[in-house]
Image (cartoon, rainbow, N blue to C red; front, side, top):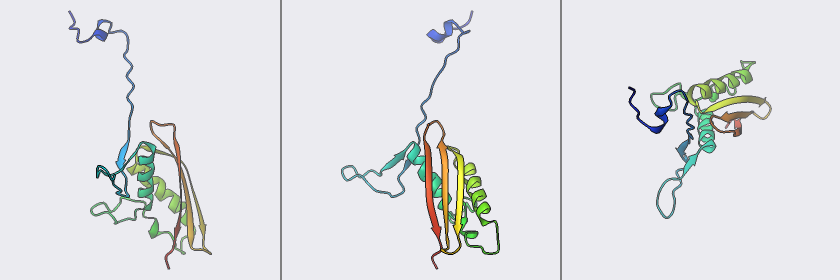
Length: 146
């Protein structure tokens, strides 16, 4: 005789479907605090993933101690005039970094446009957040300081 552990165990031929709501929560990197409680603001769900993706995109190689490969390292090839395919290199680094370090994001498209006259590179990243129907877009312009 089988041991019955719950009411669903009476009929073991039927399946039990369980839906789990996944919630993503990260601290807000501005480190702003609530005036009344003193707690740090948080970002949740799609906003948390968007903040993480943007941070990974803008983090340079060797910027994090003991994690030399964390970050896209876009500065290394940003204005390398010897390479004719710097746009494809930038695109490849962004995709590789987001795929490796942010499993909550699924990349839809990455567009990189460089303007050598203005010493700028525009990046548009479109991605979907896992477990949500939200599509997020990050647009940023990287420019040379000197």
